[in-house]
Length: 366
Ligand code: CA
Image (tube, rainbow, N blue to C red; front, side, top):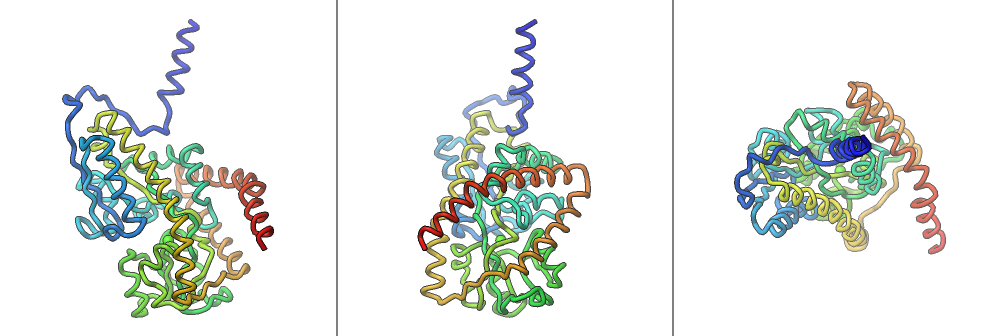
């Protein structure tokens, strides 16, 4: 009887873990040395710093770890499918894998925004904690399951910048009539503030700013923004990135394709996504610092902080938007609740850890 109880407990603990990708019966796989060739479509220009090099690193890691049993060919935006068709392409099996950002797919399910970044939400460190040890990944997999997709964290840019503007933002009045490229919930907040939000891929932003199609744009942070040359077409560079405090990218895998892989190749895919997820944050941490000083010192960029009253109003509008999405259905309310709960506890601890340390370090270096 005791053994039976122990067996049931072990089964419950191991068998029901939702943190693992779904497993299927592998008895159908005849040759464990079978080779696989996958396509990986992305929402980024081919080899674009950080965002575009991450999937290349992933492909190279997987090939090396699997001794070429799983070969992955990476496509930039538009090479096989356009930037914003990555989700559909992988869902339909046109490509086995994709790399992008979940908030591009709000047209499929609004809750996808919770898995990139929520205004005034979790930062990179926190979203990784929530995802891998706070129940986030199980919710994300539940959300993507009807689309025949398995999501994995695919990198994080850290706290972004508020964006590039051709007018100063001194009060909420200055956001009225502003046409800004800003996706996700941040875009909805800008719309409610009286502006117009636009979503367009990175490779169209420079020209759109230059020709006045848009008045402002957010993109990522100094490292990526310098690469796109926004300092040539905008006057002011605002911070902080209230709308994307820890933008997480995603790898998505077609469920059927994943289930066709033997167990060891599935593990390799999983481990490589995890490695690339951390690697991107490391890269942005180092490169943003260098790029910011280049933007200021070499290009004379005017860096401005959004005034506190503006941030406060944006925060109120953000809470409104999040609350509305949270009440749409059972899954959205469970996701929103999980994020809110994690944020509350994280803020309490980070107040006396990360924040206290930043503050102490800053004061001491003054
Ligand atoms: Ca962004």
